Image 1 (tube, rainbow, N blue to C red):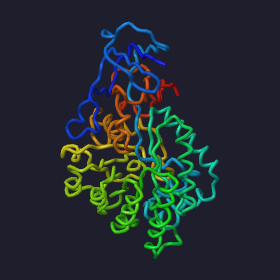
Image 2: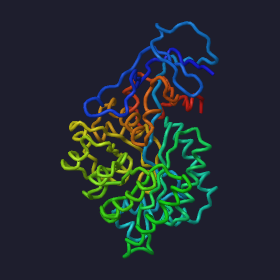
Image 3: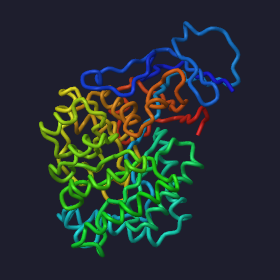
Image 4: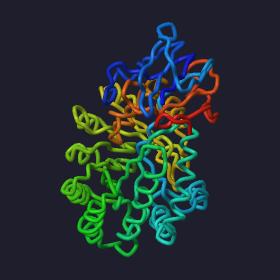
Length: 411
């Protein structure tokens, strides 16, 4: 099946020579074509260009996008979409002044979600997560990484990963799965954290790998959670079973997590509110994508990661939603785009690169997604009529997506 999207007001994020990621000052550029066409064949992008260069040919389907723009779908490289129930009571606790760590110490936070996940059926978790995936598609996302981490027992973590596998099989989104067995320390392991790390290393990681349930392994390496030594043990075990590392790092303190991420060639290190010159220097020349989660910093009223310093130092930066029930209850990547510009002083072009090609790299799919390029998967959205591409981050809170295409089909 061959489809043409014609009379596109502006076709954005096009690449003649696809890149894996965009770094430093190059993030401030985004190639576009005005008055453009886009041809897709089955699930792939076949061709694109200016309408004046379009040769006469026959199509199975035509879409007239006059007055509207086309962008590659967002790639959301850090989420916790599989969970049971919301946590608005803790939201009120935060308003009253309790810190993230205080809520966690009294059994809230991750432990709260863990109890609910342990009690929920796979069917309940699947139905709730599928609803969130549909919301994501409506906001323009075409790929998502989903972490476990709210199980905190071998059985519950595998249950979450089985749900993610089912979502992968039934949703049009491109989905990557991450085992986050070390998201927090269960109450019964308080005071003997080493024993819980043993459980992750000896049981969770081998079982997830044996059943083919995970693409990556992740650890929350931060103050009050897992130490550098704990993290190294778990990343080494993951590597033994073919699971590449992704790291929660430096959200609460300078934890050493960024250095561990680089040491173990992590695909990404995420959060990064506490990032200084030493961490930036460590990231230079590495294969690890610094990934910032603006929704969590906004919701928790935390300091902002030093994105401008990272970019000025020549680093790439990705941004993701961190959609989860406790610290970022939104799957809206358009909002992340706006936060990138408002809170992190990124140019619109930098923000687009951070939420498409660089976030695709951060989940290992930039060879397939993240830009409009020949041979890449046909994941894109057509906007409602808008004036310029800068309007996308400018009009925060407004859904600018009119039609979403995933794998070459309208969703």
